[in-house]
Length: 471
Ligand code: ADP
Image (cartoon, rainbow, N blue to C red; front, side, top):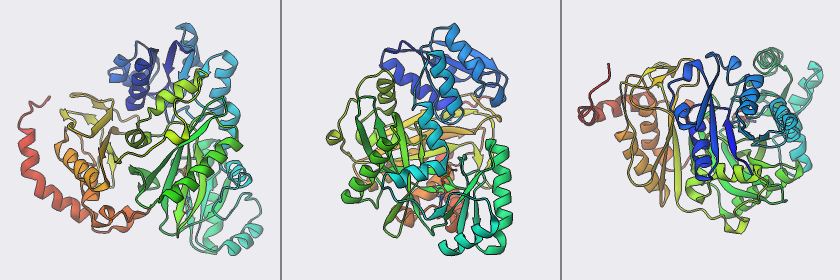
């Protein structure tokens, strides 16, 4: 059994993990950078230790410091959250060597899925369809011939990458060489390895992923799908469960494939098998070997606490649910609320929250690490919160999300709330016609945002009147 967990992360996900630990009767240790000393998660942990300056490299990515705190203060397990060290096989290996439980998959599984070409090969071996592509990119002349066979456009992706970084879409032959070089250079800089691979670039696909849980007793279940097609620069912005397009038959098939893949690679823990869906076919793109930002929508419709399942698995216990017990109840949507300027290319907008009140009421969940007066730091991703709504059906959850966005008061920084309002009112979104380039193709969104801002100005100002702003 686990007695004390060190949470090697910050912000909302650190609090999310600490909440699950508290409910499970497990103590927690927060570690934080100097820039985060006033953060809520630091106070939420039973103990908290500073591990370095603001730079993530010297704090949240500082393996020796984190291990030292765990050993000195008796943490027998480490939860890495998402991002930072969550999918770092070296970190998992150090934990294994030091006798600390890494709350996640084994270092071998992390290594395998961390390399996307290896993951593609494993998917193929498990009978899971992958996007047509080229795994080995060395000789240009050969690549050109192979790409001709697949047909343009194609997308070049870093093999060891993530977060959409370094991906290049290539529309014609004369762009191939330059794009390969560019992707490889960006990959070397960002991930320390310049290897890239190529996939057919599918037109207007949907991003649909399946949540899986696997314990060390041979039980593997899936918690159905999430749709994450609303993206900006290949990064998710709005997620929902279930997907408007997935039928019970497709759900069963995708679920079975995700479970087969997890079994094939001997996976343990919570993970997500990601697919893109195009012209009624779906293709594996990668596995995320960690809890994801958007795990919340799955929790809302299945009632399963995914973090608590992670804790059970890491403690050597069997999963608390069997596949036949997994049922979808209603619909859930998550909006990622960021401090960024929607009218200036979404530039980060760090600063103090001079007034802050999050929405509430029936069917609303806010996962956040901020409070009134909190300062959004320029050093990290400017997420303010994850606003999650639940409704009995898609219409109800959209209406509820619109209502919650109207109630949200954030003064002092610019936010993307107005974009979320425009998405929730967009007829295409409402009809469930989603695709990953939705935001770049909906040309009138800026106009919609301006109109909604004007329309809601008076009511938003009325809500703000109740606040004494912190100066
Ligand atoms: P990352 O791990 O960097 O986020 P992914 O492989 O998960 O990269 O892809 C991220 C997003 O990029 C997908 O959700 C989708 O929007 C887009 N994408 C990825 N591969 C393709 C493809 N072959 N065709 C079209 N879009 C793609």
